[in-house]
Length: 252
Ligand code: PGA
Image (cartoon, rainbow, N blue to C red; front, side):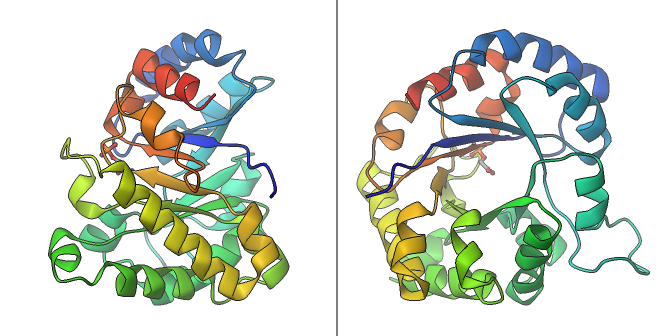
């Protein structure tokens, strides 16, 4: 089995001005400077990307964007392309967050183009997948995950599949304080790894599968110890440098 370096990514969503982001990063950097057991990433709004790339240079903190468009350029008001992000020295990009899907109409069909477009531009994608509460109760979790993972990876060349991190984020656990039970998180992560193995068993051993949804310093150790969970996508708790650093430490 291949050792996978855990990835702890903080999704700030629409939080933090540049001034607030600077204050955060100055507090975070000393707290994670010795955390060489994990990859650490922050995902600020577009406006704070360049300041955060500059402020993290030479540190172990990577900077990811929260979304992008699949086209190289065009009449898409308000959108940014993969090349525009790569030009800023952004390390990667979150794709398919449930808030993008639900509130901004992002589709699996668009994501099937976004994931390879990100890779082609040199960005590391984090593809988010997850079921609603109604889907879980109806026994539809695996069907939903299968569809989202297979669509999202459908146009990714097989030798690049493991360069896509998959974040399993049950929608009912996002921002609700209702974290998934460890068995639920492990079961879903193992199922996603098996789906990837359908493309390539070798790639599936190297793929990083994250859990997201109400991750906090208190529940992180248990979640991050699960055999198929290789990190966390953290929302609310990533806004506080101390809480976020504690989650990074829990990945050790
Ligand atoms: P949360 O958000 O940690 O606040 O639940 C997670 C996410 O949306 O990625």
